[in-house]
Image (cartoon, rainbow, N blue to C red; front, side, top):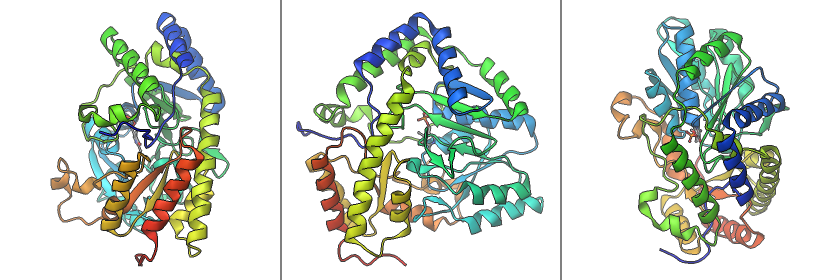
Length: 415
Ligand SMILES: *Cc1c(COP(=O)(O)O)cnc(C)c1O
């Protein structure tokens, strides 16, 4: 355990004032929940907004609601490299996971492979209920390209904008480009109310179907409310770099780990969470501008160091405004390990991406035997992310850029 300044990999800081607002929400839950959903509806100009306990609950409910409308379809097509909450939500909804490989240089579907998978649908050998593009780390998936492919097959698009609240692509908000979309309000996302999920849709039938799914959910119990208060206080105290060494050193907190667990809690959004969301617009904007400035700095440094910049670097530079973590590929495993060890020693908040692609997750491996997802597996072994949150100081990012440039120097890059 190190007792010195340690950056978290991602952060959407909560303040004491947010906590006080949270308590107001405890006192007047209905009013605060109504306020937040109305503000979201207006800001994102969408017909239906639903608030739930988490991003994975949001995805599960969207999929269940779709399944009600298309009972003979039971497969969900997701990227082979993504947050483990995505396959967990598919399984929780009682549906089957289908994977499409991703390109490490875009962190998005390989469109050629996506086209092949969707073609099978047209020949009647597949039963895809939904296609789920993910805006990983806030970098937008190519929604236009994906939509073109999906349209010919009449497959609903469910946009995973869990990491992309407030992010824009081609002039529109992420989360609004499919039949339904969702944001996560978990810790480590663009904006946090400790935990939470926001569903957006403009589709009337889907909206009705979702309303009855949400109707059936339990309200947050008082024990869960207490847990949320405890978590909010912990976040306020421990997320700051001066304290982060403490939670980071406690393995039972499983910080930074993403676990695959379909048995997650599904409940309504609580009054406390709604209270925490007050001032969300100003907070989100402030976070975004800090993140954009750090991301632009990294992009500039890396472009200077490597004029033959790779597509991922170009994508990061272009979407600096969107990112909640800054992804970099380190093609050499030994160097990646070295880099992560150094960051650990210096408390710089570098993180590997998700350690496994979905097809190699121990709990799911069997289902994908005989299928190959080379892009996803390569990404799992090469990706790291750099922190861009408001706690990052200029001195930190200089140090981080130096380390990364050093690790990539004299590198033979993959074809
Ligand atoms: C975090 C995340 C989710 C799930 O959100 P939770 O609020 O943590 O349940 C889903 N998809 C992606 C891409 C995520 O990063």
